[in-house]
Length: 113
Length: 116
Image (cartoon, each protein chain N blue to C red):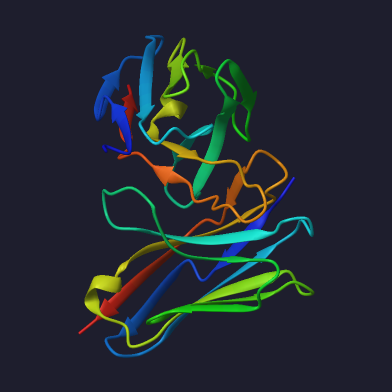
């Protein structure tokens, strides 16, 4: 089955700096890669996603890049703000297999003033 | 439109007791999922369903059973709870991932279960 590895497990940045979280996946058939943000005590919520036919996608301060050959994808947050502090999860999915998501183990991002 | 809801929000069980967690969605989604979330381990899929009357095992199914008698509901049962099942349980739902259609999974608020 799919295996997703995520790094780093914790990340501390100063407000205004950029943050980068990286994930690798094992199944070359995976074709959809979402990123979820989970605030303390809350449910995971989708913040951005990318499909395998696209190399990069951007939404305001958030961007995701995908390298299919190397089987890795990354989340980039620019101009970080205190409200970006949360746990971020990457995931991979093969839309041909009942849409089962395999999650990474999460990155705790702390944005300090 | 409530989205995905879960009951109960919190529960404390003694070892050996049984309970059922209820997930309901009003988005007419075909697919539903149960995950458990443990510190440092992300979300792991317990069981899932691709439609009414169908269920399948996920990554960590042992000790759990599920049923999908109605399209909008997905029940997770613990027949004989163990301390290792102490966790936060999330339900999610989505549409099938066919070409051009979104596959976003929408999560419920979670159930915090403690087994003593």
